[in-house]
Length: 162
Figure: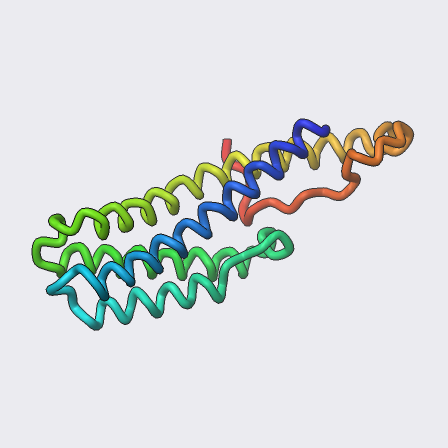
């Protein structure tokens, strides 16, 4: 049980770190647009900034990660951000020559993609822990091991995928 709990916490922390990476990389990208990149559409930059503010405002935390509405709203904001990044790369002439801006866009996309796998793994360990907790609660309580949590961990919304 302790190993499962450690895995759950590790994957949860990885998910939080990926969300922070999306926000930090987008902030750096906006700075790069302001100071280095030329020829971008100012409306697209404003849309990226707006999407970033939504992502920040809707970001889940330890208490809300199991709330489907919170997670769906957050993921919709991330999807909007990714759509605006796609607009930026497609609309900006010679965007490929701006190395750092391209790296930041790729970092944001990769963080978003890795997040899907981290959530899936988190849910797998979470479900296994919760099932064992339910099946063995009497033995766990009798053991008196205070390190074993008797609370079920919340799943990222949705059921674990096989």
